[in-house]
Amino acid sequence: MQAVVWHGVGDVRLDEVPDPGISDPTDAIVEITTSAICGTDLHFVRGTMSGMVEGTVLGHEALGIVREVGSGVRNLRPGDRVVIPSTIGCGTCSYCRAGYYAQCDRANPNGPAAGTCFFGGPQTTGPVDGLQAQYARVPYANIGPVWLPEEVTDEQAIMLSDIYPTAWFGCRLAEVGQGDTVLVMGAGPVGQFSITSAYQQGAGRVLCVDGVPSRLEQARARGAEVVDFNAEDPVAVVQEITAGVGVDRVVEAVGVDAQRPERGPAAEQAEEQSAVFEQERAQVAPEQHPQGGTWVPGDAPSQSLQWAVQAVAKAGTIGIIGVYPPEMTSFPTGAAMNKNLTVKMGNCNHRRYIPRLLDLVRTGAVDPSSVLTQVEELPSVLDAYATFDQRGSGWTKVALRPTG
Ligand SMILES: NC(=O)c1ccc[n+]([C@@H]2O[C@H](COP(=O)([O-])OP(=O)(O)OC[C@H]3O[C@@H](n4cnc5c(N)ncnc54)[C@H](O)[C@@H]3O)[C@@H](O)[C@H]2O)c1
Ligand SMILES: [Zn+2]
Ligand SMILES: [Zn+2]
Image (tube, rainbow, N blue to C red; front, side):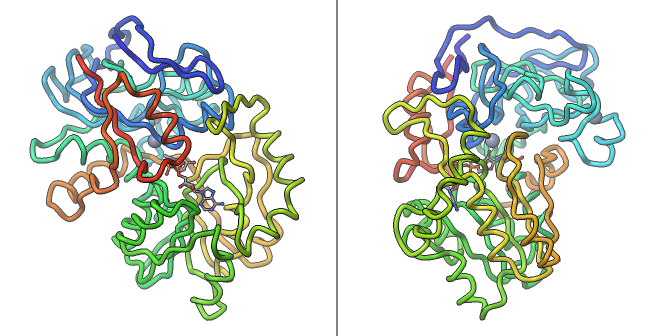
């Protein structure tokens, strides 16, 4: 079969690889009908999330048709159409039973202390071959995949695999409640769904910061008040429109590839920190292979976290869903401590939220396909990766269709 394979930092390829097979009784083999590229995949190719193993199939967002099930899978049968959660949980351990599927004790082959197990990630997460492929082996298929009703389209369902649940989870972490003023850092696909989720969870007002005009325009169309960090100082704008109080909640949906402003009033302060940012970048991305303008690690890993702490009100809450690698050690602890902030973070417990969000989609309350901007065939996947990496205008979310 064909699959997108990680060969090195700055080196992804479309390879011919062996078809996967059932190895455990709770496995299923799913023929992937739609997959997607995520900001998380970019961290692996830029080198800001290290520890990838050469030969790992990339991708952790997909849906498809079940083709084969192991003897322990009682809930699915060949022919079922399912969405696959990005993170893998056993459903049986105490963590899964409490809803912490992303901290399952059994799914990660590296042991209970290794933490989150997910498709197409670094060695510490499995590694488990990913979903940007024609077929995938899905472990714990008796728990993970969620059956899709016919009326939910592929373009809608692909958003339920990772980014809509993650955004929902981010708003739960940030404790978004009735009437809250919420700041969403980042207008990538996760940021877009964070805006929608914040309103669904009761937000009265949602602000969104990014530096890419086309993404900010999408955020505005979802009801956010948008701030371009290359044109304005985002913290000053937040102070101004909250009468000096700050926002109640922040959802951080940027992650380790955060950038600093290139121009505008916030650029000068960022420039003063350039040595610190450079040090952070060297720490999180010990190996870098930028090619021209592609696969360039973000030049200010802690920029978005700093703005989050500065923009939130005293005693406010920050939910961090942007991905940071274990090597990332800088966070403005002192500033946060002295404001009595609550800070929560983590990998989404996808399986916990997907059924409820699927219901919202099925009943027409939300059409998640509005975030999708591109659908590409598998042969053009490498170009799609490069354009998405460069945040090409209008390229917010890319779905892939593995052809037969
Ligand atoms: N926690 C989880 O379970 C989980 C799941 C999925 C994705 N993620 C992570 O969420 C993050 C966002 O994912 P995505 O797919 O939307 O990625 P993305 O790369 O498409 O979006 C990130 C956005 O942040 C913007 N940005 C860069 N620097 C900024 C700054 N200083 N301030 C504000 N915005 C800035 C970029 O312009 C971009 O639009 C990534 O780190 C991804 O790995 C986490
Ligand atoms: Zn993802
Ligand atoms: Zn478990």
